[in-house]
Each structure stands twice: as structure tokens, then as C-alpha cells.
Length: 254
Figure 1: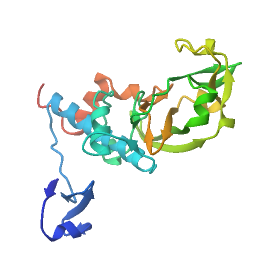
Figure 2: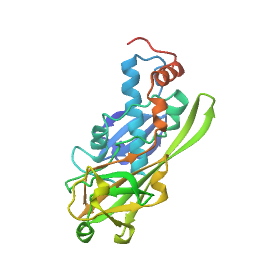
Figure 3: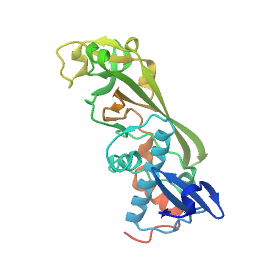
Figure 4: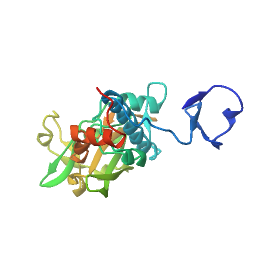
């Protein structure tokens, strides 16, 4: 993909012959309609490409929410890619790669900003699944909160692999959504007074993930996803790496 710095393409968007004109964060790029990926890669090249392509798919899922609170860096996209640089790397086969979909990963960044971060963990309250937080009622009086809900959908494809989709929705929360719970339930969180939790059966769903974001005056807290989903683990193994490499003609070497 080439960057365009001047000329009439600055005012063009969409298809142009065998190319696509893309405008992103004040810059213009020219990309071939059909990008030919090299069939054979080294192990290092495969790792780098798989990380980049999967983080791009995660970004598209987050961008689709239209609720992006990521500050710092050149632009939200570049900051997101940098913050997720050390996420687990799923190795996807060629068909999975071209599907453009993503896997639900633990610790994925959904927001990055200057507000005090919220500590939270999945647990239970009186036997009911919950998202336990270190928030107090005082926090609810001065800030607003958004809940990012990530859901993994699996689509059977072949006997040895699947296709999958990751959707993200954002829910505004009200004080009534929270339940007051004893701080002893929140170990290792340390609070003198009672803290708050979100209680619902969905917090036990092994194919969903959650992030709670503090919002004030257009700024946000820095938050990552918590999840019990382990589906992604089958794609970070040596076996998955070899299957991905085979779909591109095998590895050239280390």
C-alpha cells in the first residue's frame, strides 16, 4: 500500500482501476485490489504477518462500534496496534486469513486515556456470575461508564479448522446496573468501603469477553478485556503454525 502525498487522488475515494484509494487519519493511500501474499514464508515472517493481520482484524471490530477512546500516538489506529503488539499471535490458515475475522483474546486493549483505570475481574456474587470491580458509589456520581461486550462466534468450516467472527457492542451503564458487594469479594482489590459489581448470567459465558471503561469530558480510562474464552488457544500452538504455513506452501526456514 502506497502513501499519496499530493495530486488529484487526495480528493478521490473508492475504486480506481486496479487500485483502491483509502483515506485514513488525514492521509491518502493507494492499494492494489488484489494483494498477492507470498506463498512461502520464514517462521519469523509468518509470525510478523499473522500478528499484523490479526491485530488489524481486531481493530476493524473495535472501529465498527464507533466508540473509540484511544489517545496518544500518531492516531488511534497506530496506538491500538502498538498497545496490542504483545498479544498472543494466532496462526490462521489462508482461508481464515482472507475471511478478515478475529479471535477473542484476553487483555486486548479497548481504550487508552488519562482517566483512572478500573480494576475488574470475572467472579460471582451470591452464586451469580459477575464482573467484580473496585468502583464505589462515589465513582458513579462523577463519571459515566461504558461496557464493551465482545462475543466470539464459531462457524464450522473443515474437519481440522473453523471460521470465526468477533463482534463488539458497547453498552452505556446506569447506576442501577451495579450491585453493591463487600470488598472482601474483590481480592486482591483493596477497598475500605463496599464496591460495585455487574451481575448477570452472561459473565459466565465462555465465548464472551468484557471491558469496563470510565468516560468523562471525552476522555477515557485505559482498559483491557477480561474473558474466560480459551477458544483462541488452539491457534497459538506449533500445530497451528505448521497448518498455517502449509496453506501457504510451507516454511522456507527459520
